[in-house]
Image (tube, rainbow, N blue to C red; front, side, top):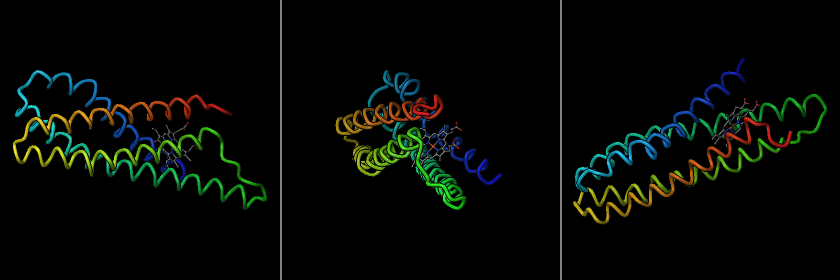
Amino acid sequence: MLYAILKTLHVLAIVVWVGGMVFAHFFLRPAVARLEPPVRLVLMHDVLGRFFRAVLAASLLALASGVWMLGRVARQVVQSGGSFEMPLAWTVMTVLGVAMAAIFLHIRFALYRRLDRAVSGQQWAAGGEALGQIRRWVAVNIGLGVLVLLVTLLRVGS
Ligand code: HEM
């Protein structure tokens, strides 16, 4: 039962994280592109500030629940006398999950801070540049997230 709860939390956290990135990148961004820079940048700063707070929680939850599940399975195998070999899909998920979290930290604590400073100082050109960099790294994380989902759900390697 605990394992099922952990897995549910894990997948819900991924839904918020990857689903939110897809919405921002493919639907929100093109729609606000026609707005004047001051309006667009203030709006995106506000939306991203709220979204990144949710992603911070979701990414911590996804990583913690993932490592917890791994630990439980490994312990059960070892306790019953076997040796634990991590399935390929789980290895890919762990490595790319950690990479996604590192990219998110860069987005939140380097690039978003740059956007924040630019919006506070009404430096719209610098703000546009920071937003462009956020967009590029979010696209990378969408790619990694979709890759993890394909490898995991298609059970690649098993
Ligand atoms: C440190 C990072 C991560 C670790 C350690 C981890 C670990 C795990 C483990 C142990 C499971 C249980 C698999 C099973 O019982 O069959 C699982 C399930 C799952 N994980 Fe992760 N995960 C991580 C990150 C991610 C990421 C970034 C994604 C998606 C972008 C993801 C998507 C999923 C999905 C969809 C499942 C359900 C698979 C199924 O039941 O078929 N995980 N994860």
